[in-house]
Amino acid sequence: MRVWTVANQKGGVGKTTTAVTLGGLLAGRGSRVLLVDLDPQGSLTSYFGHDPDALTHSAYALFMPDSAPGSDVAGLIRRTSVERLDLLPASTALATLDRQLGVREGMGLLLKQALRRIEPDYDFALIDCAATLGVLMVNALAACERLIVPVQTEFLALKGLERMMHTLNMIARSRRERVLHLIVPTLFDRRTRASVESLSALRERYSTALWDAAVPVDTQFRDAAKRGMPLSVLSPAARGVEAYAALLDTLLGQAQAPPQSQSAVQTVGAG
Image (tube, rainbow, N blue to C red):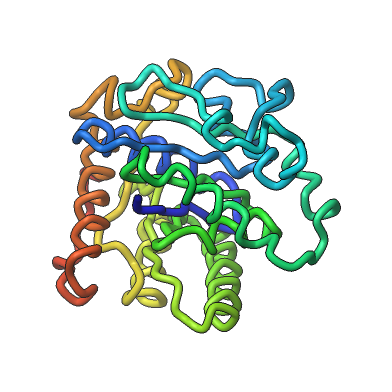
């Protein structure tokens, strides 16, 4: 099972949209996919019609091994209306974990250990991560083989990206190995000067780790969220879906080829 984490230390940059759309595309291509909501705000959980405030069985149980039967990871998973696409939901109780767990040894590997128990059941797990550096993000980074960093093409989002890159450097020193990551420009609007200049700044500062395209603004993502379905299912020809399909091809290709084999810079679906 391949595990990808979607994270950035800034909200509103398209993390949940990225996880849902990539998950929907993978499921549509025949893969068995688990979406993991590791954000106390529960946006991914709410997307599929569940209330993070009301759930009694959620990802929170993975960090509370004595709270059986919730500690059985398979028992926490919920089906979605999309074939081959399942959800491990979040509850708002996740927000209390840093206070409860503190710096206990081994707390950063709990998610990785839980996913190992269901590895035969899925081809991919996509983790939607909280924007705050803490035990949840540490678990999400420790569990993944690749990190996807969505960053909105506006200057405030670039500051959040700087914090994320600093966190990656700290994790890399701790793990003594580089965290494979891909920065993904999102919410790109070629009609606005701010968006164009932000994308240019990303290319100047992060060229070696930056996806060579961008996900455009597409209001259909909002409509898909209201219906609780990936846009790739509702409108496969949408320009946002076209962009994420190209991103998925890049991610799958990078798993089999060195980074320098990536294609020339382009903006998919942004025209």
